[in-house]
Length: 337
Length: 90
Image 1 (cartoon, rainbow over the protein chains, first blue to last red):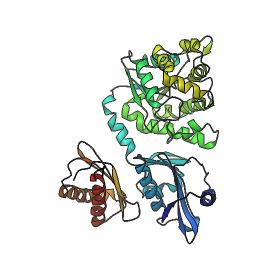
Image 2 (cartoon, rainbow over the protein chains, first blue to last red):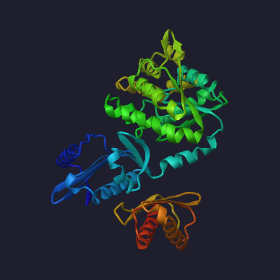
Image 3 (cartoon, chains in turn cyan, blue):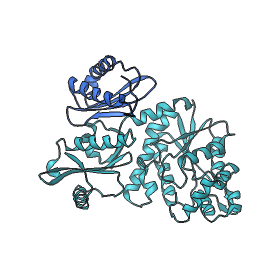
Image 4 (cartoon, helix red, strand yellow):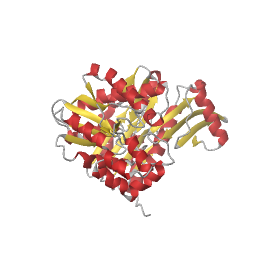
């Protein structure tokens, strides 16, 4: 029987099995499940949101139905928690074990494969079909946490260079400002630009599924692989659907992960027919404008400074009760994004 | 029967299937299967028959199939339908 591992002793057993399968134990899971045989833990796996991970089967018991039992129960619990599609990052050699459980590879990288079940990518694209414009279009993926004059400048510059610009706003709820607020401020901030379409990135660009390390800030080999997979997914699945021949990115003076991402972009996208254009950051008072600077000014209650960094639409939000509450939280939260 | 709430039934074990139902304005069926190439039309036919028998005209039906036989498809779908049509207040 598949059961939830709750006691410290059982979690310790799972940790041990996961380690024996050369995987890292991470304690940010929503469910941790296990299968026991004769009192011995022979299979374990976890769900963190829509990502299934730490799937480990005792080396002596692989090749049977343990993985199917585990995944069936993990997806059942995930569905109950309101999720519909699920992702798995795995090594290329394990791809087939998941394929025969109806997980479909979205991106293949020499060192890892990202698989999905639930038909989420097809649904994501279908729901945005009406936004597709013909021609050699441009794309910009932004978090806008929150929308600044710097973002406005970036969007203006990019939009002037292509017939249509798709502005993908990162959907993931791992930033100081909630997605709904970030999206609204972007829409309000670019409303007057007729060739810009604002849309959400779904699970398919810089999300906890495609690029968890963007939010974790841990420098490791895994971060580079995820970054590359995020870009391969963009080049192979997103860009062809929307007719994107050009991706824009702002120069990044502060954040190292974003800088690495930009470097990776210039390496991977051009060979796949997507030109990469960097746009110089807008400065205010001799310093490049960054959302990080905005959050700092908000946390410090420096509203004069905020006025120089964000458009009136964003400023009104920052001065609202919701905006001020986020400012108070920022004081104690060291996250960069 | 009417699909009023999200519901599911079944497992991902070999020869079984998972059925996911959710309310939708039209009727649609999505099939993921390890034997999709050979058997998708038969799985679809079985699902359509069950839906017709229970007069289900709206909703999204998704199945993740692992080579289930007809009777398993019928049983899992009927279980999910019963769960999806249950009155949420009761």
